[in-house]
Each structure stands twice: as structure tokens, then as C-alpha cells.
Amino acid sequence: MEITEETIKHVAVLSRLEINKNDISQVTEQMSSIINMADQLSEVNTEGVEETVQVVDRDTVFREDKPEHWQSREELMKNVPEQANGFIKVPVIINKDEDE
Image 1 (cartoon, helix red, strand yellow):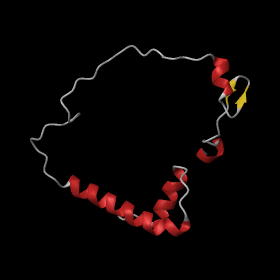
Image 2 (tube, rainbow, N blue to C red):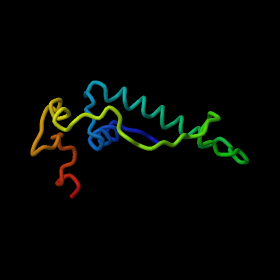
Image 3 (tube, rainbow, N blue to C red):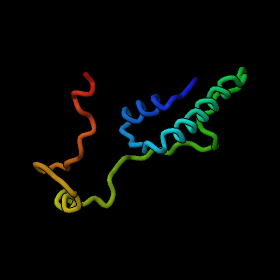
């Protein structure tokens, strides 16, 4: 699969990454190497090889999800850079017009 500078620019826009114009060719080259490596891996014969979900011999330990060292809402909001109507205000990352 050929990765072009236009592909990298398009992916950068979709993922909201800012890539310096001077770095586009380097990023394109690096991404091409990564994709080519993945293509090589897909050619490996894995017939008869059991799937591996976790490489260490360890069981997952489940515990109740309870907050620890909880602070009051007032204490939390003291550390918030911007708030509105008692909620933490965050930057908009999805504009409705972009999906149309």
C-alpha cells in the first residue's frame, strides 16, 4: 500500500494532528515503513498457531470500582481552568458541520 503526503495530510486532519509542513515527508516515509512492516507480517503462515491474548501467565483481578481519596465537588472545581454552570468546560473537538 502506497502512503502519500496527501494521505498523511488527510489523516492528520481527521485525527486533529498538527504536522509541520517541513515534517510531512519524514512522517510519510515513517508511515510507509510501518504499513510495509504490517504487510510483511500478514504474509507469515500462522496456521496452527494458537491465538495469544495475554503473553504473561497472569489472571485478571476484578475489584469493585470505588473512588478513593475522593474530594468534594467544590475542591475539585477549584482546580478547573474553565467551568460553566457547575460543569467542567472543555474545548470542542467535533464540529457538526464537518460530518455533513
